Length: 76
Length: 423
Image (cartoon, rainbow over all chains, first blue to last red; front, side, top):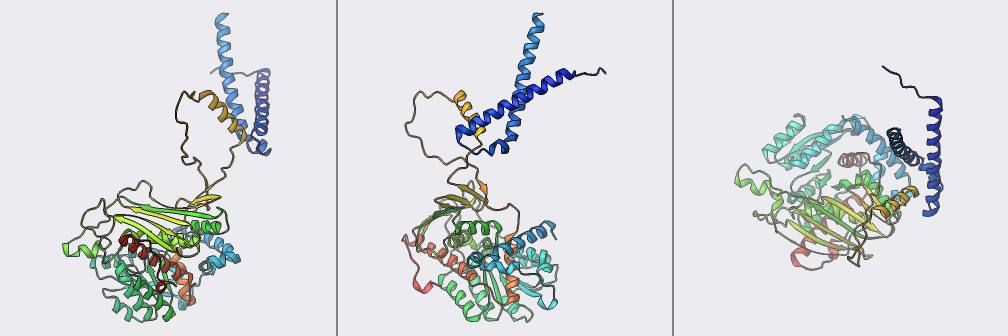
């Protein structure tokens, strides 16, 4: 069986994408707390939601990136 | 013995110890305190019970007693029924240990009986209870108390004159959910109670198989006015008790209507009823019961200006709906903006449909059999020689107002209770 090797560089890049998304979703959470005038405690109590949304966004972006990759390969 | 029952009983008793420790709870629910008291295993403290009426309810009570008799230190020493198949079922349930009788008067002649449990058809409650009390026995009588208002009053008066305990089977007074709910209602959690709605809907003819025609009235006694007021005494009396408990007293007036509109099978009692009970502070208790549709089941809805409680399903709904987390609100709004239909035309008035909100639980949702708890309390009262007077009063008010509601339906008038029936 062929081993799948994930390069360290690639791994760090994906982690950075995830971290960036996590920060973006937290900023959205801060915006919505201000907009709907709810408790700042939601920054902690709704972390599970923030994580779920982060992962969903990552998944969506991954699909989009896969499409881009396939199109680029087809053009080449 | 069911382990779950033992665990729940321990939990419940712990909880009761906390509840009964509060002065407010002691005033409004004094019957609870006894449950917090320890168990006794002494043979000299064993309570000897006899059960009259081995029909469905009698069988259920027998099963309960047999299942935890050793815990509550009680014994079912005698059973009685004048219908042989029921008596045989009782012998099986008690594994032949209990002495059997077909005549309750002979049972009352027995010396080794401390208390009597009565689970016979309604019209037999009064004379059996009165004779039992007069024979020096404490009595647990299933609801409703009696078929007539005079008999109901006589039962209560005999309890007072004999000095013996009279407990009426209103098990909701021992239900953990109801106890929590009423405690919360009385401490203002739903604000001022402004309306109570209750209903009990079933879809069956309430008919039992009759082996020979001459037994029709004996077996299907719930269908005949001579023996029962049908839905009123068999179902509504429970919920009238709950409303009285919440309102801390009986209503001021009642009006109602009823008919036989579906089960036209020779029965004499209504198959659908609707009543309104008015309480002194202006609160209305709106009640209905049918046996031709079971979609809505059974419920008591207690409505206050700050919230609503639905006791049968253990639910509390605040009038101020808790806000969803901000991030969810944002997602919902975005979703609405993207997917909502563009209005072209339509109603300019939006109906005030029920608020879609799942609510919270009133009480920790553990299962605890309130029928067992009320039997345990009864045994402990017998041992103590007295029970809180609120218990027979609750039973009395529920029964008397059930029967007054029957009169209101029959006369088509709004009725108040005559002073001679007030306790």
